[in-house]
Length: 81
Image 1: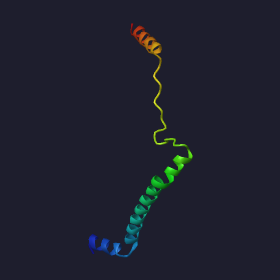
Image 2: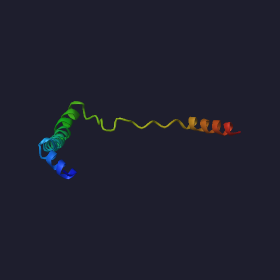
Image 3: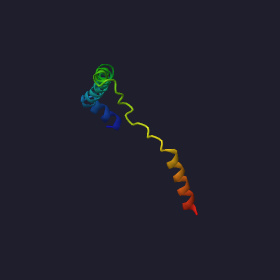
Image 4: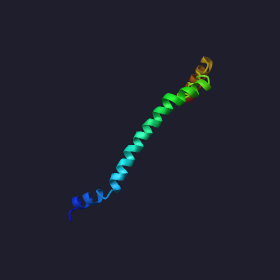
């Protein structure tokens, strides 16, 4: 028996077909759950929390005072000598 015929026989036993059906159903179910969470659950959570945007919680670091920047530049120039 050739490899192709053995694989065809194995695939038709049902194991591979069952696995393929399970993967397709799992992917579809995952997309349904993701859509449900994004379009139904998260708007409700946003209303309850007062509209806090949690998708970009990392705030930009505040700029240091100009005096601190100048002192760092002076320190760096002195260190080069």
